[in-house]
Amino acid sequence: MTLEVGRRVRLAQDLGIGEAVTGEPGAVVGFLALGAGIEGTVERVDGELPEREEVREYQRLKALLDAYGHTMPEASRTRLVAEIAALEPQWSAHRERGSRMTVRVRWDNGFVLDGAHQDILTLL
Image (cartoon, rainbow, N blue to C red; front, side):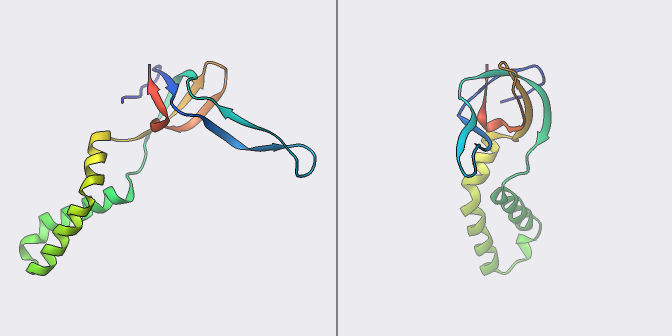
């Protein structure tokens, strides 16, 4: 999914905002939530979110194998290959999904959601 300034988006899931609103001491009087299905416009694209730990670890181990694997003892190389194989599903998912972005969205109802992860949005 490519998020760009001016693109129309829809909230894909209910999203609770902030903390519960309290009235009398200890009494909760409300909670603000944006309901799935509301639509709005992307005002700003902030940039890429950091990769997940498993993805960074896969990249680190793969670079180590590529650079030094031919000089490693057989047991160490075998263990490294097994660790890389265990991280392969997360790496594949990352490549399919692509880079994750955060954006600022102005909803049609006037609310603004800043720092929203693209995972909670769908394009219109």
